[in-house]
Image 1 (cartoon, rainbow, N blue to C red):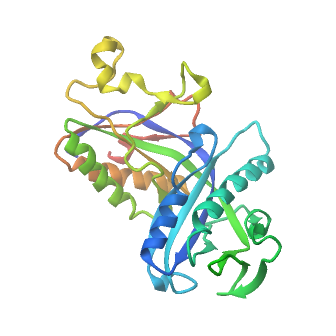
Image 2 (image 1 turned 60 degrees about the horizontal axis):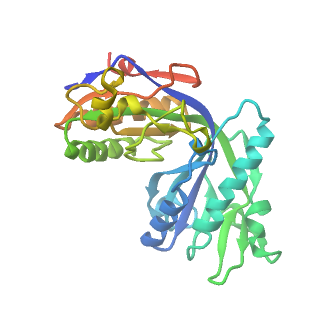
Length: 301
């Protein structure tokens, strides 16, 4: 490794995920559906977040069309029952399907959950978009709901599994130059996409946050000790290294802790090859909040 890896860790959390496959007739529609459905909001504001895992060839999908694997994630709140969490998660997830995928022409949704711990009935919050005219067919070896719409017709597998995984794995790649921010981020994301079972919900993220805030009504706020533009103002409180002008973050959610670790390592290796990247670090909360500590130097003994 050409760059310094700080002796620190990423603090990650247990989370719940839906993992679905979306198919469409053409690439443009598929990409619009995938990108729209996985856009904001996010877990840090009490909603859910999504990401694109990978695109699929026609021979990888049940209906022989172009496809994409999407993940949608929710946090676990230890003060609430699993039933309460799943109820809210399913409601939020259904909005993404109904507003961003169902409305795209000739789309279909299939369950692709790995190791599900439970399932929801898509009829309840998605199938009934047919206003009682929806029906069930056995297609592609699956039980599919057919939702009649004005460009016939939307199809979704009736039972969608949800599983337990890890959210918030992350690393920071500290840069001297603006070019390094984009180039290293691009290479890191390309490397991460080769790892199965993970998504990067924010891709290159320019706004890492902290838990403590002066404005709790808006949720997490800027991680001010790591803001290069505040270095002179904060003086000794600033933690920005002397040779660093930019600190982008890549956040990784994955279906297993091992998948998140593998993706972090691949992303760090790729980012570190770019001239202008001078240091690797990670975001944490002092070990006070997360369920997992992922130590950076353990990846590169």
